[in-house]
Amino acid sequence: MPFSKLGLSDPIVNTITDLGYNKPTAIQKQAIPVVLSGRDIIAGAQTGTGKTASFVLPILQMLTVKYSEHKLRGKRIRALILTPTRELAVQVEASIVKYSELLNISSMAMYGGIDAQPQKQRLIWGIDILVATPGRLLDMAHQRALHFDELDVLVLDEADRMLDMGFIDDINKIIERLPKERQNLLFSATLSDDVRALANRTINNAKEILIADNQANKPNITQWLVTVDKGNKSSLLSYLIKEQQWQQALIFIETKHGAAKLVSQLEKRGIAAESIHSGRTQAVREQILNDFKVGKVKFLVATGIAARGIDIGELTRVINYDLPDQADDYIHRIGRTGRAGASGEAISFVAKDNFRNLCAIESRLGHIIERKEFTDFPVKKVVPISILNFIPKNKRS
Image (cartoon, rainbow, N blue to C red; front, side, top):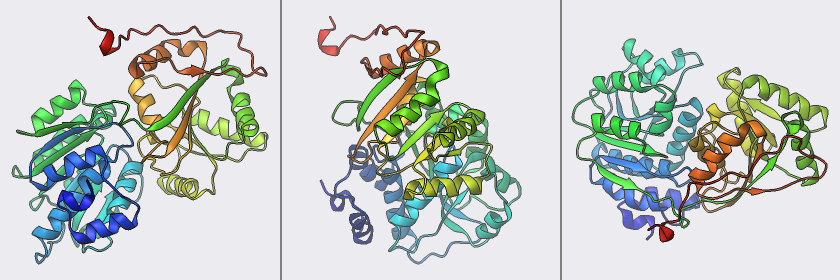
């Protein structure tokens, strides 16, 4: 089914066709017609399946039709998209700009960590679609820099991540300020009990869309791991970059101190790298991320906060230098590669202390991750093979 059959206008279809969108993904095929019908939805689909276009495209369509001759008042917005991180806010707003190239639609990303005055100044003229992090949005609302009385649509993007980051109180405060009559769209990589509880408080009679986590929908990602003693991880990474001639990698690490240290260690071995983490200014993070996207930076070390805020269409490789504590975080991280039908590779460094986390991840995946060994890096503290509490459906009694 082509995009033209989903109810989108010719300008939108022509624009996304020029961007290389040939046919809708599973989530786009199901969500776009429902959003256009005006219904609330709760949508669950894994990372990399095209969730952003699933709500941005129909919102553009609805705003264009409804407000073709209705001028927006100052300090007002028509659609609000809440995101958990600055990086994701920037990414979503960039998508809005691309998709609305032939439309008269205004948008802005609003987040903390930078001077609020330019954002406040931009709000004076009114904005059709505002993408915001919860904290900065509440600050602006308290200062009466924007009002919600003309709001039509609320989107909770990456709802599970927002809850994980402790934004539930801010989200509730924001929802209390919004008009009762509005369309609500909740998108999440996982539909946990907490996410469903949020949806029950926020959304009435919603259409639930759940894209099954089956092989047909999984990104094409080759996963493998290396067991390694903690003290050898940076040496192993340098070895793999050189010996396997890696040209690009997004490297996830747990702490900002560790990120800076790893960049220094790589540079001492002749490998140029950069890092983004909460200790760097927003302007610096955005510049480094842009340099990574265009290839000026080949190896980017990132703390987990950036896991859902990085969207690079042809990212070939993700490395879990530190294995995450939560299995869902592993899924989100490796979902940065293998996007939009492209193939990708996900490598994890696993020390003996990570065994419990590895078991949780492999249980979540439903299979053992392939292990590779490198003779130059023998392991003193052996990591056991995990035992899965997993029974395939066709073998269950």
